[in-house]
Image (cartoon, rainbow, N blue to C red; front, side, top):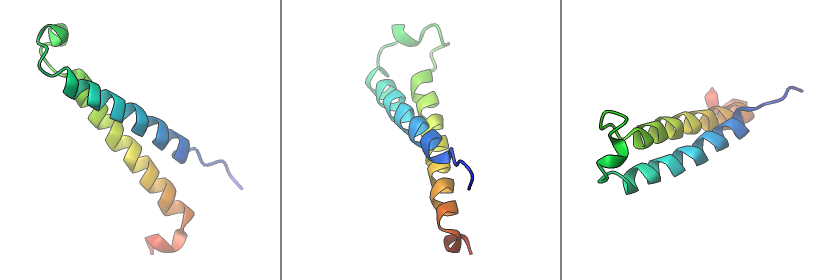
Length: 71
């Protein structure tokens, strides 16, 4: 019986990804806020990538718990 860390990692990245994505959408019109990052909404992009990674980890976690689902 091994330790499966995909579920907590997936939850952590999904929650932080949602928070960053919402923050990126709410501050998208503030040009001063993103001047240091070359006018790239880094909160939005990092949030979307973290959310996608978290969802992938959660999918792998669910898939491996039910081995018949992959066959």
